Image 1 (tube, rainbow, N blue to C red):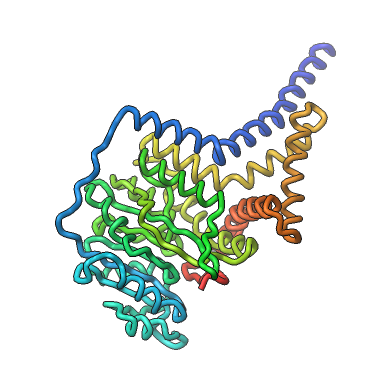
Image 2 (image 1 turned 135 degrees about the horizontal axis):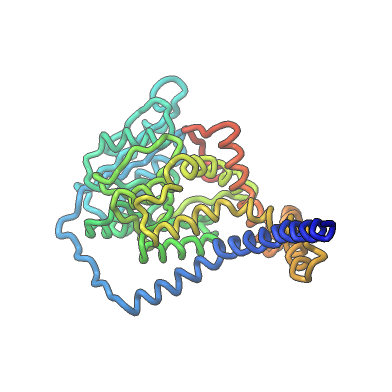
Length: 398
């Protein structure tokens, strides 16, 4: 009996001792998958599809549709005139373009000069609305719009002349309900400041678009077929909520890389941390209660994309924490765990040093750590305080 008891205890201990090992390899594997492995899969998948099939270019519509270009603005008096002027220079027939500026908080006391300056700049329609947040402001503009294609832009965005034509062209395919363009971030001198991370994101978006549908967009430049437009919860921005909702409703959501816009970048990594933290507070609302986790209507390919690019990416802070704690706990087991623990600690040290020394490797480490941490900070903000529908411009971007 004592022998059996000892044997049983040892077996139970071995089973328990396996869990840190399993947790380490699962968390590390998922981090690698969402950051790199998923991209490798898309590259191979795209190449395989290109070898099997060739799709002829879509026909160009003989008559250009009426497009309503909607700019939701809150306290944008310093940039709104330039945004309207830029819209009026687009390579699109003027009689087929309706420029709408919807001013959130433009009605009532405390309103600034955004509405007046938009009218003076030549906007076709200016709506002065009670404060309700960006999404409700966009909804009001859509209800007032005449266009069959609804294009959306941030107030501080600037579009290239051919951007609207490139953005609208995919709608010649009747299955397309949503199109997003490409945004570049520039500094005050106009220098392109896109990093490796953002270029990689745009590359992923291009592969997803070619294979199925994109899993996310951006607020600087996108468009929706009028009959595909949906009114979502006011805290759930279009960037993340529209693509997967379009797919669930039978539409495709695609990327048009030649539809190019620029925006002024956040001037510091710390500012980018605050911006992403605020964005993730809205994103987590979409993930947790907005329907993203419900796979119905996805199909296996798009479901894999949502899980890999969105759900696992947003879970990265937790995965890093598990990988760090288990590697430290297993440090005496094998050299691989010592290497893993040392690598993660070195990343944190480099990120901390990046606040004092402007070395490129240190800044990359700092950017990665802070943007990853912003995912967790946004979740905590959402769970503790909820998410407000209103928004303020990120510091230094106007």
